[in-house]
Amino acid sequence: MNEVLERELKFDVDEQFALPRLDDIAPGAGVEHSTVTLNSAYYDTADGDLQSHGVLLRRRDGDDDTGWQLKVPHTEGRVEIRTGLSDTPPYELTDALTGLRLGKPLLNVATVRTTRDRYRITDPRRDRLCAEVADDHVRASIDHRLLAWREIEVELGPGRRSVPRRLTERLVEAGATPTRFPSKLARVSGVTRPEPAGETAADRAVAKYMTEQIDNIFDGDLGLRRGSDPIHDTRVAIRRLRSTVRVFGKLMDSSVGHIDDELKWFAGLLGEVRDCQVQRRRFREALAQLPPELVLGPVANRINTDLQSDQLQARTVAAEAMNSQRYLDLLATLQHWRTGPPLIEPPSVKAVTKRAHRAERKADRRLAEAIEAGDDALLHRARKAAKRARYAAELRKPLDKRAKETAKHYKQFQRVLGDHQDGVVASATLIRLARAAGTTPGENGFAFGLLYAREQQAAEEARNRVRELIG
Image (cartoon, rainbow, N blue to C red; front, side):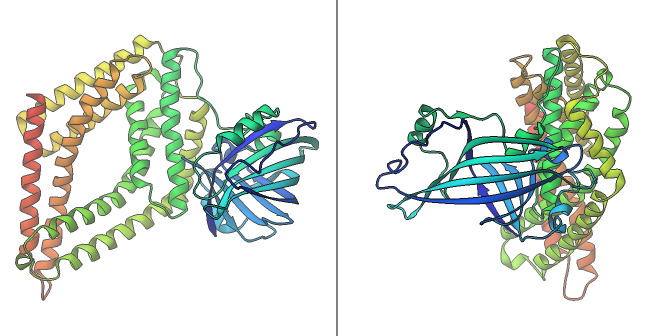
């Protein structure tokens, strides 16, 4: 497989459209023209699950650009993942899409034939492609319907981040209009990524916030299955979604309690992986700050070996869970929530504000109790309450301009208490590593004791910072 970042713009044009001059888009630009025929068979579930996430899977053959192509949304456009040509979707792609397709089979949902006049605009000064303008005459079949249209695609060359203004202006002046369809398949199927809706401002705020988190969870699923590492972002999205369910649960139906438990289960599995990642980096940096003469024995090797083993085991457990029916059922519910949040009725701004303020009061109370007691467990409990108050304020930003400051306020507590909790977890891990080293020939626990003392000091400093914030 190979991956390409694709940046493009699409325009609707009629049959009378005449392509404007292209050879002066860049100083000294050259234009290479060719005509190709492309046949594309698009695959999705019967319910359009891939398209609802902005993901496309197609089998393309023709004059060039043959093979299977998976297009995935990216902050700068789309990433196109390519594999060789085969009769059925290759396993490496269908496996990566397991979560997005909710375990459902993939079907050939549309066939598109394109006659493409391709104009490659080159920049001789930099010896590279500036942009490719494709004038497409398209024929498509879906559900026994035949469709035909013409469109213009402008795809940027490598290294360019935006379409030359002169090119865009000329296309518009010639009669091209930016299309509302993100792909040819979206035009023929009518399936697009859902936009959060609602009857009231509060209804829309809740729906938008929940949909954003659910989209991030699905993005994380695809990333994990592709072998990347979006664990932190996925866990944050789960926390935000769970917080919304916990804080505003009285406004939702009774099913949310079960989903909260399922989200907690999966977040816990990812947490086992994430903790190992964080601690390996944390201990490596701390070890580098110790005088070399105090690092007795193969300390770095012990840390890397033990924690990497734990991390690989935790990743395996998480991967197995992601292929379970339990997990796919969770994703199926979240997919439903993207278009229909589990609200009993459209909430009022007053109702949402009331629940958010209650979360803030609870966080304040737990923070005060934890500081007074100085107990690690209570501080961790206060941290979770501060997160819920912060996330509730984030949700309320479209409803109350003061919510931004409220979110910032509780984020301060969350960060400091997060430093404290990291120290508590790291201390427990260091004790375990020290015990293993102390009973292994050629090793001892001296350096682990030094690292433990640093963690205890860092935890105390975090407690003092919390007192100052409350102060």
